[in-house]
Length: 213
Image 1 (spheres, rainbow, N blue to C red):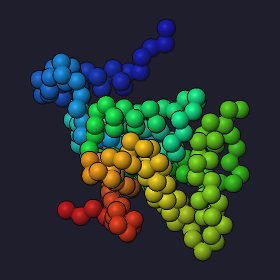
Image 2: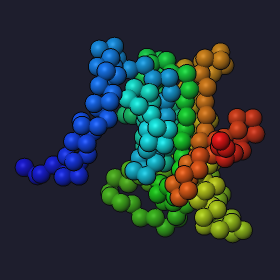
Image 3: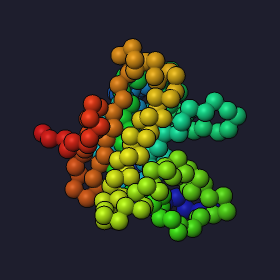
């Protein structure tokens, strides 16, 4: 049997002798009463942009869904498998979260692939290519913008992707109805890995504004 990674064993040991000791009672209550997070975060799989770390969240505080490029697909009640949609449904209908945050980040590999017209599939299934097809119309418009630098095109599509996901969120009847009733708030955010800045989307103008303290 392959050996479990030493770094993870060491990390678990540190967790059990550190954070778990400090939050033992919270874990006990969560185990007995279940989770009641108020916020759903839809984030990227990228290991550099973990929502729990960025927001310094404790156990039970955030319900997190992570996929390539933090995208929300449109509402499609068909017979296919819809992991992100299933998690969204559970968060809204069962957990009754009050806030949904779509959080993108800088230097996203999925967005970079979407902008590369010559990108080759990583496998015969081309799962990433098909998934990133959700952004194909926007990506094609930005690809041909010769005035922008490569970095500017990347950041632009990262933020457009957030707006696109928010629009898709509102195609879900449960989300649309609750937002209209004032029982659910939808937010966009973009995290800069390089300097730690968090930019929040203004819900009126849809511009991204750096969070100031």
